Structure formats: C-alpha cells, structure tokens
Image 1 (cartoon, one colour):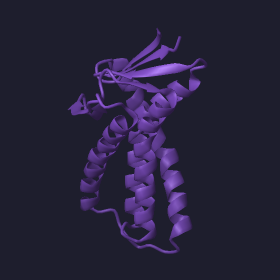
Image 2: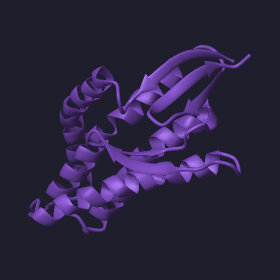
Image 3: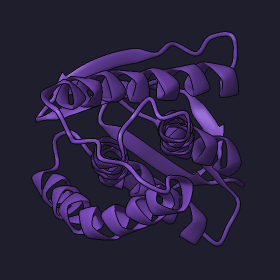
Length: 177
C-alpha cells in the first residue's frame, strides 16, 4: 500500500479553518433547500423557533457521532474499537487503526447527514417540528457536516482503488496494490 494522502481534522489549523468557512458557506444553500422542503410538505405553519430547539441541536450532535460510531463498527471487523471525543470545538467519533474500503468509508461519512435529515423531515411531516425549527435544525446540522462532505469528496475524487485508515486525528488514504 502506498500512502496517497493524510487528512488531519483535529490538529491541522488550516484544515479546521477551511472546514469552518465551508460550513458557514453551506448554511445558505441548506437554508434554501430545507425551506423548500418545508413549503412542499406543509401548507401553513405558524410555528416559531424556540429555545428548546437549541437543545435539540446538541442532542443531534451527539446522535450524529453515535451514528458514525455505529457504522464504524458495522463496517469494521470484530477488532474494531470506536472512541468518541470533543476537541478544538469539534465532537468526533474515531476508529483508530481501522481500514475501510472507499464504499464503506462513504457510508460511515454520510450516514449521519442522510439519517438525521430524513428523521427531521419525518418530524416535520408529522408536525412534531415547526417549519422554522425544522429549517434551522436541518440546515445547521447539514452545514456542520462539512467535514463529512469533504471526506466524501476526497474519497470520490481518488481515481485508483483505495483503502482508508481512520486515525486519531483524521484519515489516511492508501492506494491498494
């Protein structure tokens, strides 16, 4: 195996800054996207965004990382260990030393975005969330997935067959021999 790329999310300040800028830039398109969904699903809604919705966001962050952890285990082998933490303003799940195919790592990276977005949309449809709450929670969560989207982009842009190693601080991408 030949190392093609190292990505350090937790200690590389340049990567962290780029991802934070990316997350801020993603807010607007996600606000528009989730507002469009809310308009399509609900005819009328006089709900408001409330303080309790901020608490829901913190719950979503925890659930987001638990989803990563679940898929690390599901896509790994019997030796796969998962760790959770919070560093430099980022919550994270990691499975240091575990290797995954491109497809499995894509599932691990994108599962929280897909599952949480779907769950929030179902909550909107069932009117458990008001439109403003749905739009805010779904948009902020989606923008906070900037690192996951970045990993997915990097993995999909690799031309050769690859293996991805999860590390304490990010991922290493190897060309398979």
